[in-house]
Image (cartoon, rainbow, N blue to C red):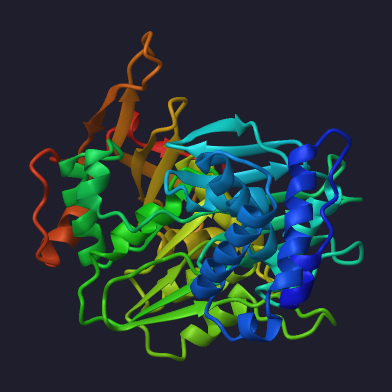
Length: 446
């Protein structure tokens, strides 16, 4: 969208919305006084400063009489509408907000510290919200209209954006912006209560010993955060390839190749899928492959890579338990165009997956590892997992904060031996089981 169009776009205020009308009036006055050619040559920060200065002169010259705080607020709103995202600008500037959810023009929610709250903000109308949405998607060369009513994209600043508009969204244009938190280390996650030191030592041993790890959990449970932290345990000299729908991982190693899928263009062509990238990555001599999330036929390619020399790989999957994660991998693997018997997928999973790390978000907004489980089944037999650690919650008290402790269970002897061969000592809290305790081994439906 051109600079002139962005500033001159009409404000669709409703009856009685004097503040929206005032913003529209001063945006029009601003347009009359600026040199568009000069403005176009300025960097974004300089452009904003120039507009604020010009608008300040206009208000001083023509009124209205405002307090310093009201004046600052009016200037910010006018410039936000002209160059930015209107009422969303202060939310994007608030580092404590991790998700912004716009459910039509009159309903805006945010997530802070794991809790969702509604804000007393609103767009002037559906048209103004659509104008903001179009401005957002245009920055990534996408469009949204009735023929293309859904958009999922990553902004240049890193946020993931999802848009769905009428007629699919019955409550009006719906916009969801997920802001990715900074990269946390595992010690920092200990401080947040997501795991304890013994679990950190165990996970570090698994990663260094090249176990294939699946991070499982529901939406917003911190899968990407944990995956990023686990990746920090990979030795610096190894060649790592990350594959994601929206690039979120922030690896610190030097030898990292980041791949991102691409949606089809407006003509329906040019799509590059996660599966395409997984297949291509196998030709790039990777030491480790990290898939941000498996959600389709690429699961089979990932499983085959894990079981044919690319051990030590990591991936995430949406599932509510360790057993569900294995069943979901089996279902996703069957979505490949390769006609492989459903039962044969058990063989692929049993030979590929070593560890499932299950995450959950609790009622107080905290995110914790609820279970670390080892897959101990073989061949085409029914999935069997051996939990080696789990979170045991206590009854919730008046403060509504989730308290509990992490319970550590014996490691199966074959796993302990694999760690020993890799030169990884067992954490003190974990002993070696002489035989798998029937009470500690769970059998998933297969």
